[in-house]
Length: 166
Image (cartoon, rainbow, N blue to C red):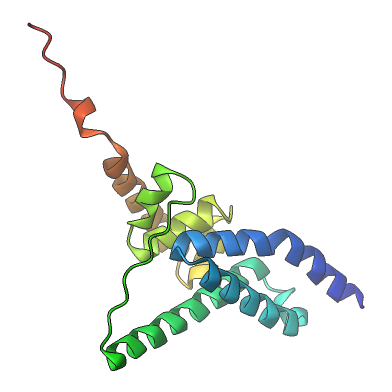
């Protein structure tokens, strides 16, 4: 095994779990997250000479994984339409409590940006690379997500004082 492959192995061991976790939190589907991550890493391995020289091999890998997921979602939607069947939504408990339950309800772009930034611990530039968008779009998505999460997680009852005149 050459030096480049040992670099890949080290990178894989540290990065693969974060990618799977991020995809799981984005999709809510562990099997799809594992398959997409595995396929993305296989592609990275096959192109490691080129990928390892990129500014963000991890960002590239996330982008590939998200593209794989999107293709699978489009294919699944087409199959569903063609078969005229309706599958019940999967009931998956929130992986990390109330906050992640709220994140699950964010629009896809915001949800993906939040997971990549705060779970995968990518910089905004790396998140932009992974999502195939600009850093400013990532920043806007994160700001909008924070606003939405703030509204979702604020207990409305806390905003009204109790009437203790009795």
